[in-house]
Length: 224
Image 1 (tube, rainbow, N blue to C red):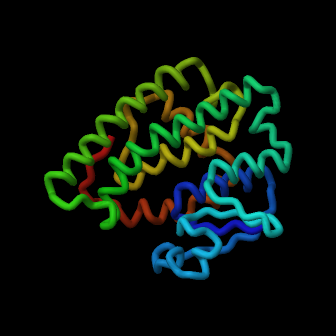
Image 2 (cartoon, one colour):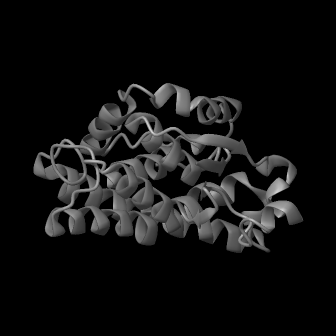
């Protein structure tokens, strides 16, 4: 199986970390987002969306990190994606919450507009309003995550064992490190982050992310 990816991509790392922890062998094909390789015809023939990651399993091509994650879990009978209907539904619920609520406000409202020119709004006022909206909404989601999800004495998002939802959520939450988010007011979230960062393959998967964080040190950002 081949995975088209970039190590600085949040959604690529979701798949990378899961595969590493589960011992799933993938042939990694770098798509250099920094040089625009994802917009070249050769790559758009693979994924017309011009996004990473993409999984190619013997000619079966699959896009979208959430679909790839479920596919790999099903292919390997991973315990991180329960087979019983209700526990599986809880994992699906948490994944949908991150993709549909948390990520759109935290990433596209707060983090990305402060980092990438193509996420900048046309006016300074509009840009500032976007970031403030993202910050306020992110506070709302972080309160839910800290109090109602992890605040039930859960070691992980769906109970005492790691699930696909944790692989999704951790990348979306630690994304904020790029703009200096410490999440100091969310002790349950911070504890969960610590448990995820203790995974055996965390450091190897996040080498590029850590380098990106270091390169931004000292810059002035709106953070949580």
